[in-house]
Image 1 (cartoon, rainbow, N blue to C red):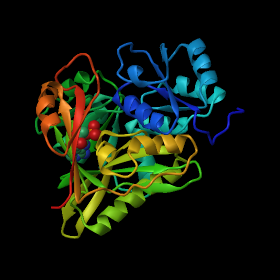
Image 2 (image 1 turned 90 degrees about the horizontal axis):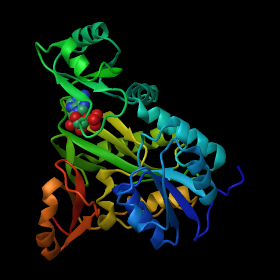
Image 3 (image 1 turned 90 degrees about the vertical axis):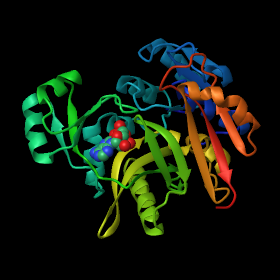
Image 4 (image 1 turned 180 degrees about the horizontal axis):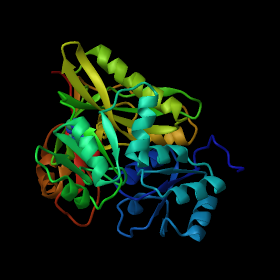
Length: 364
Ligand code: AMP
């Protein structure tokens, strides 16, 4: 591996995946003179129209991967389900940031939870489930409600089912395809928050304000920064993200989703999920912080100093435009103070993220 790990303006960042996250990464990089080369198997991906170079090929196509690795100065990704073989192949031919070991950690909920617990950080109680018998035993231990989640390939509530009293366990297990799962005890959270942060190639670490997330139909609907949590809890949340980033020798933007539980002792944090990439709950930083999460990620993978994560205004809101909600674009364009972001997707489908709008609120 002869490639330099601290790049100059004009260098090319290779991005695996071509959705809206890659699109916003490419745009942020372009502002700093960094070229984006997007690799995706989907011809109508929305990043293709804003990048400097493109490869339309399958992630298993080694000739295309080799040409891509030769054409870029560093490789990054916009989603965590990059096949392990693809990541390993690219690592042998280029620099990959964040390192592919992080993909292996986060692609499997069981591995991820064991890793987080190993750092002394609380997760929901969980059990590995690979058969109906294991599910029966786990459900007896964790009680109801509890949530059965496939270990791999779950997102936006897909691949998970809430178990209630009297549920037909064999039927539920089969409905997830009999795939390896984890059963999680239900966490009676007061709110959901996330830490979006970055670790640089030099080990430097910077976090944005902890933000609060509201989901509708399992899809993120609204993010507000800062979260309504006490300063001590916010500091603890950031420390957890730092610990996770350091332990995985992370380079780039990372998001850690957490539940805030309120009990007699005050607020307690329970880590739910790690996203080894820029994250929807960090979109508010596009208009609401000095350095957006997209610029921050490009800086980190280029080996550049991280930028300021300082927030503008008293509060920043980000609302997703899901499915038909995107049709509100004319009124959002007319709204004073609304910053509209449309992803250029050709087809509107229910549940599909079509864009988002941010609002910086100067004073509460
Ligand atoms: P996930 O796919 O793990 O991010 O879960 C999607 C959403 O389901 C979370 O954002 C929560 O709203 C809810 N959820 C997931 N796991 C739990 C849990 N163990 N207890 C309570 N709610 C949960």
